[in-house]
Image (tube, rainbow, N blue to C red; front, side, top):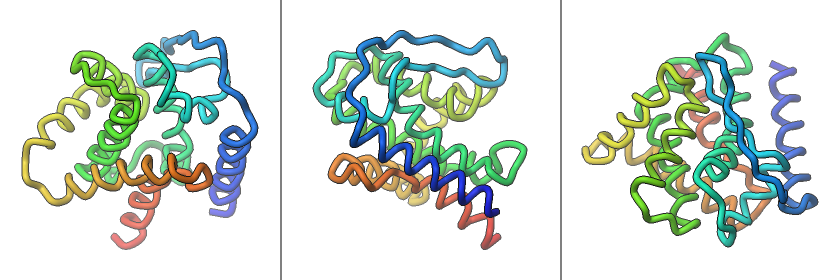
Length: 189
C-alpha cells in the first residue's frame, strides 16, 4: 500500500508541475496502440499543460480525447495499484457515469456541440480507460444510462463533472473522485 500511495503522490506532483510550469505543446500528433486489449491515444507533449488550452484551442477530436484520457491516467493508475485489472467497482454504473460526466464537462468547456465529435471523443476516452474489449460497449451503456432515472448514475455524472469544474477553478485540485470511489467502496465491501 505504501508504494501505491507514493506513486499517487508522485503523479500528483507531476500533474502540479505540468499544470503550473509547462507551456502548451505545439505538436499534437496522435498514435494508437496495436495491443488488442487497450487503445492508447497519445498527444506528444505534456497533457496536463494542455487542459487549460482546451478552452481556447482548435484541437481535433483525437487530440482532445488523448488529453482527457491522459488526465484520467493518474486515477486509473491508483485504481490498478493493488489489482491485476480494473475491479468490478471500477466498471459499475457509478464509474461509467463518472467517466462520462468527466468527458462531458470538458466538452462543454470546449463548447463542442457536434454530436458526432462528442461521440467520437467519448468512445476514444472510454476505450482508453476500459480497453477495446469493454470501452465501446461501456460508452454505449453510458449513453443509455443518461436517459434513465438512476440516482447512482446521476451521482457518478455529477462527481465527474464536479471534479473537472473544480480543477478548472483551481489547478491544484486534481480530479480523483473515481479512484477515491473505487477504493472506498472496495474497503467497505
